[in-house]
Length: 533
Ligand code: FAD
Image: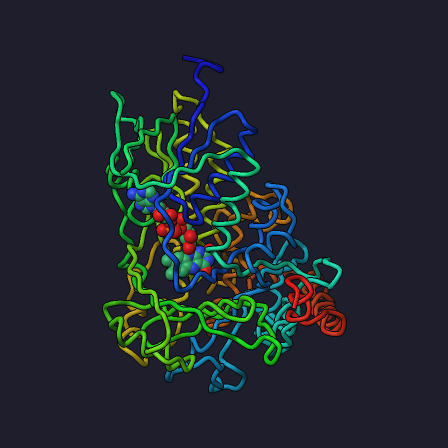
């Protein structure tokens, strides 16, 4: 079987959550009508909190690819802007609170991880010059404020976009995940001829090779296909249950396995809209805050070893002043880790069926987008050439493990030890990636994913999908947690011209911050214009 005779003719996507409808729309578009795409999904259950945070390439790599402009999908998904994550109270001891406490040495206990790109000079990232300045006593400004344009803009609740739609800085979005799935369903079915079967999968047929040949449903349908995309969520009905792919449990490396989430009303006109996601340290984990129009999504991500669902709910209520008797909460428990392979035989797992990482680095939708890009790039025929499958699996595993390492670095490097949870995070067994990065950082070297090439991520999507663990992210995180390198990059002692040449970059950032502060609209005004009053 070769050439067109072997080509894939039918794809069935199992699951109609974010991953399922993103997969259907992306494959429908990418395969240009050459393949029948069907989505089999049980009817959706309404969720108590659907506010989710995304990363910048969602737009370029996904919605641009679908040909849907930013204003349109932002309106459909009730989206708001996200210029950074703001980490609050990860250094100081105390009860959970949304406001940043004061650090013992002065200044607030918060730091930003912006999406803006870190400049470099003479092929050395600005972070290394900042460390040298700091070490030589020449600069005391925190790394994020000294090296990025965005932090003062976020303090002032400024929009990253001008009123005419031009971007002033690099940004991502908060969106209503329920609306995203619904919008993409309408788009995929209406514009890309994707078939939607609303039914429950009850059985799986396999052929002689062990491949899945058809899915059986509660109402008696039999859906045959050449390729199956498992978007059935954490139950992993095809990858895990039907094919028995081993799950790599990472719960010893990351402590949080549970979430209590809700939505909180917010008076945007009175208080403005925060153009960032907040990650607030709690007694046994952390809480996200993702602003949407007139409300924000929030969820306490905690470790069930250190608190109960009832205690976690009470702590979340105290944080936001919620009445537990009138607020609807959603509780969930998660298996932390990934399947050994995301693509097995003719089944590709995308979304939570292939792995789950707590949303500290907002990786859920990022993984879905990246996996779809990789699937299309390595799209098989019915021979399922193992070379395609192996490259895909390697890339997905690296991406997941890099994000896990970045997440583990948060816990390992926080100096907090005021609760049993924070004491336990200091004893997590470190992955080799975390150990190596921290050693390199202490020695003054740039750090990041070994798979991130800082010099190429401006242009190349594949480098950009790995930008999560870039040098800039690690420096924001590690300096923000109060951990400084032992010494500047030793090579800088031999590059006085580079050190002098980098100095004007710091002044240029200050000028740009001031200019943007004076010219950008508030996030509230920009969103009001976009969504209507
Ligand atoms: P699900 O949403 O669980 O969807 C599974 C689908 O499969 C459902 O439609 C279900 O009906 C269907 N299904 C299951 N069994 C059957 C069956 N037998 N027959 C038919 N259909 C079936 N990501 C981010 O990028 N940013 C965030 O801020 C963020 N926050 C998160 C917060 C929490 C608490 C959680 C749990 C995740 C978060 N994520 C976030 C991750 C993100 O929500 C998910 O990765 C993403 O939505 C993909 O989910 P999914 O579609 O794989 O699974």
